[in-house]
Each structure stands twice: as C-alpha cells, then as structure tokens.
Image 1 (tube, chains in turn red, yellow):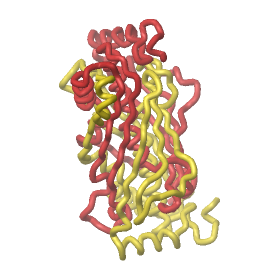
Image 2 (cartoon, rainbow over the protein chains, first blue to last red):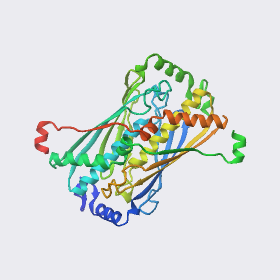
Image 3 (tube, rainbow over the protein chains, first blue to last red):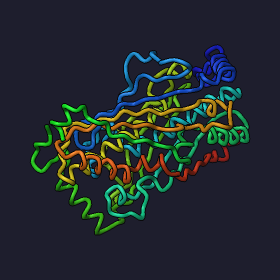
Image 4 (cartoon, rainbow over the protein chains, first blue to last red):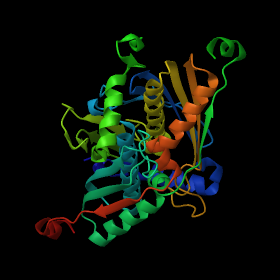
Length: 198
Length: 198
C-alpha cells in the first residue's frame, strides 16, 4: 500500500497538502482555477474531448505533456457506435471521481487511513424530453442514487461525518444539486467563410 | 464522409432514428433509462470508473462486450498523479459530448448536413470551498462558458434555431442549469465485518 510511503496517507503527500492549503489561505488568488476542454464531433453520436492545459495557482499549468482524451458515444440502442460511454454516463463518472478525491484528500488531512473506497451510481432518465416527445419531463436525470462503500479502521461515526463533509464541499455534487450558469455562444464565422457557408 | 452512407445523415441512421422516436411515442415506457457507473479508488487522487450495462428501451442492455473505463485523477499542482482528467474537467466533457450528440441527431432528423462541429469550454472555479477555507464561495463552477463552432450548408438561422433547441433538450445541460436530486448513502457493512472494521 502506498499508505506506507513516508509522509503519505492514502497515497496523498500530506505535507504538500497542508502547504497548499496554507498557501491558499494566505493568498486566496491562488484558489482561482479555470479548467478547459475541447470537443470535436467525429461521426454520428461519437465525439472526442481533449483536455490538457488549465489556469490555476496563479499560472498557466504546463505539466501535462500530452492531453487526456475522452471518447463520447451512444450504445447501439441509442443509434451510436459505442466508442465511449454516453454523456449522462460520463456525468456519473464526474460525480464519483469527485467524491473519491474529496474523501481521500480529507481523510488524509484528518489522519484517517482508507483501505478501500468504491461507489455505485444509478441515474434515472426519461428519454422523451431529449427526443422532443414531451415537455412534461426534464431532459436530465430525475434523480441520482449513489452508494459509498468504505473500508477503514476509523470509527464509523468519523467515516459518516467525513461522507457528510465531502458532500458539502464536492464541486461536481454542488454542480448537480445547485444551478450552474452556462453561457452558450455560437461563434460567428469569419466574413469570407460566412459568405461561403451560409 | 459517412454522410454518404445510404439512409445516413451525419453518420446517423435516419430511418432507425425515426423508428425509435415512433416506437417511444407509441409506448412511453420505452423511454425509461437507468444508467450506471461503478467507481473504485486506486491511490491518492486516482480513481477508475467502469461503465457497461444499463436498463433502457424496456430491457437490460447487454450489447457492450467490455466496459468503458474512465480514469480520474488530479494534476500535480492538485496533488495528483495525472492519470486522467479531474472531475470538473470530466464534467465539461459530459456537457460537450451531450451537446454534440443532441446537435448531430437533431440535425440529421431535420435533414441538416453538418460538415464539422466543435466546442470550447471553460469553467471558473474557486478552490477555497473544496479546501474548507471559505463558506462564501460555492464548491463547483461559478460559471461555464461554451462556444459552438459549426460548419454546415444550412442557413445560419436554422443553425441558430437548432443550437437553441438542443439547449432545451440536452440532459447534461439541464443537469447543470437545474437542480438534480442526488441521494447519497453509506452502505452498512455486514455485521461480522463491522465488528472488525469499526
């Protein structure tokens, strides 16, 4: 287990974690992050997202030598080629990976050693809104159910309190439970192209 | 271009699309989907999501021979090993891939041929909530800015109307703009394990 690396708890460098929190406490500007993604349509339901740079901790990050690539597609029953999970499945991944990091980092900060941690997620969706067949149902999940499974030698009350705390500070859980302003813009084509394209 | 496959528009089988919509119109039960994901923590900020089966169109789907795997991790500045994009970056991917499918499928249904489609996304986040340093900022994105880039021979007004329609019917955009109930449960350990573990 990486827990045994010196100065590490749950694979997290605790000294670096404390130093990061202290640095941001002293200079809140360091807490400002701007994450980015680029997505390009491939064919049918298949699109590909490229994620590499971001701004954070006061500078443009250049630590990633190559981009992370995420494929999105639909399964056959939804007319896709199954080149990747679909968008609402990817949303479940975003939620789970967010709670995983939140739980592990906060456990490390509190000195709680975690042996294993896993999540099962389910989201219920009525496809009629997406297909334009009903204005009475919402397009997204009507609800998401998430089950935590934790193995740790910490007392159950501590694990429960940690789960509760992580829910209050999870970025993706916040974005699901509370409205996020999303500004959508259709980029104007350059004039020359517009003449040709429109 | 796959646009040229017989009966296909933008790589979408239009006949199957029309048949799917008709079948759901006749039997709304077919519109009920339940998507699932399983996530397991690996080490530090690194967790792995497995996505395979789902319920939809009246039955359990078994068309995926192997699961889709998504890695989640943090970059070095956020104490991770960079094994994958982080959770809030994955959320941008979920949004983009959702709008891509929505745009392409609806374009196909309307007979609009799309030459290219891409998105740039940015999300602004203040890390202080995640780090427990401020109760005044929200944990998630304060806002997301998304730019569409479309090449199509359709009139600009039609493309604009399509962008607008896709925004109204996109599952992930709905889940960001409007609250989703998320039920979180900490699974009880079996009695014997509980004695050992807690």
